[in-house]
Length: 307
View (cartoon, rainbow, N blue to C red):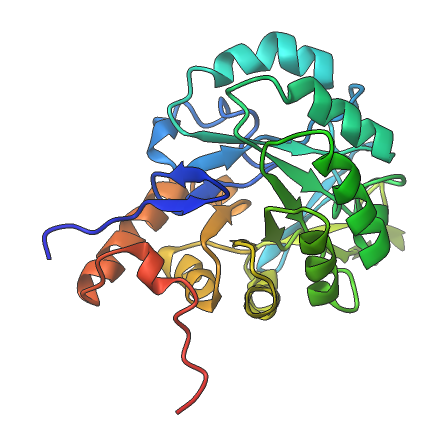
């Protein structure tokens, strides 16, 4: 087989390949421009945009952990108006699919950001952040119950015709129940998982090592949890699933795709290997060739659970 088709179409959008850069790790698409052309990616998700600028949490707010890291950045961002004035013109030149991550402290905040960005062609979809564990108001408070998650999606569905990708939290009893709820009220896709809430203690000082006390755990340590949740959600919903969590090589990404993810997002692995998304794309291509598969679509959800 001379070549394979890596393109994926979900939510009416065509992605060159199934590998995206995750929100919070890629800036606004400019952070990795010195390493490679971002048009090589299937797409990327911007860092969160809130209605008003946010300074984020006090430092220290990143701690390395075994097989991962804890972060408590706190959604630091420039706010909607500066994003429109300074960031959007740059995004209009990106030859890849741009998804804007939207966060807020209230439903009105989310509405205002989606309304403010709805008319811009550079924004192809919204990833609705209802799962960040590092803020005191909003985000995860919407994502921990089916009713609050679905009610927010219902409000946003009335605001925009752009695809709504709801980013789910693993810090819940039943992630499938929440995925089904947001699907019922208009979500076009779900992305999962966001970080797991964790904590590290300095035993000599007997103090938390993060100023925020707790933070979000990411990295290889969470991947088995993420793959399991993607598998469960993909079997339950009719909408596409995007897999996130601890992808550090092509094999990791393939686990998510085989478990049912149509796309994957690479996050903190880029802090270790900036060109990791390109390695993942190449690895998926080689896997398809080796297994005589014509398209990555043929691989989605192809897991065998019975003898």
